[in-house]
Amino acid sequence: MTDIRDLFLTAADGAAGLLAAPEVADAWDEPSALDRLSVRGLAGHLAGQILFVSQALDGPEAAEETIGIHDYYARAAWIGSDLDDEFNQGIRAKGEKDAADGPRALAERAATAVADLRGALPAAPSRRVRRAGWPFSLTLDDFVTSRLLEITVHSDDLACSVGVPTPELPAEAVETVVDLLSRIAIRRHGAVGVLRGLSRAERAPASISAL
Image 1 (cartoon, one colour):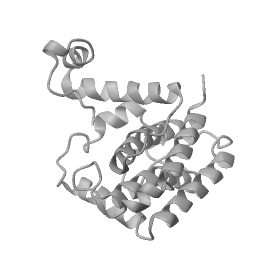
Image 2 (image 1 turned 180 degrees about the vertical axis):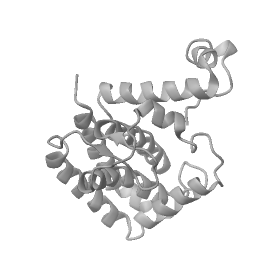
Image 3 (image 1 turned 120 degrees about the vertical axis):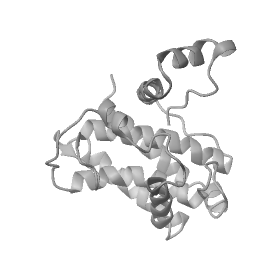
Image 4 (image 1 turned 90 degrees about the horizontal axis):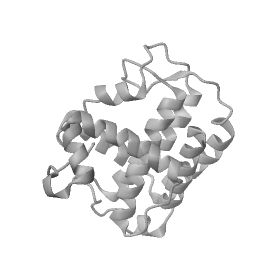
């Protein structure tokens, strides 16, 4: 089985390549495929998922309670939240801020971070990490897994926004993300709804979206 860190690095490399695509620069100021988010804001948010891992490695080990990744998503108040709530407004604002220097600078930051992580991440010891504001921590590998989900989803969002193919990922990366999304969807919609959504179009609910 491929190590989760290797899967993350593959996904991050694909995201960095997508950020450098001329189609992203050409559509920089256009609306993205996501409501109320520009292409530049989405690009900034995508790049941020790579940079978060760099920041986690550079920072001190977290002291907060460590929870598992499924508990993390169970506690995530942003899942299914209104686009105008404070958290989502903050996501859009940070994406815009991270992209403020333009597409080339953002793509270069992402590529540099991936190159640095190729050396640092595989060798990093197991440790507790957190993002600012979290009252808990995750293990490094669980944090990397959560960023793999973000990169996978938002790479598709950005590719669709600018009309290019979604970066291909190893099957194990997709399976890891789909497993997480399926578990989140079950919490949101119930086991029967998800089962029908995946197997019985004639009685499936209108949505089994995880996020």
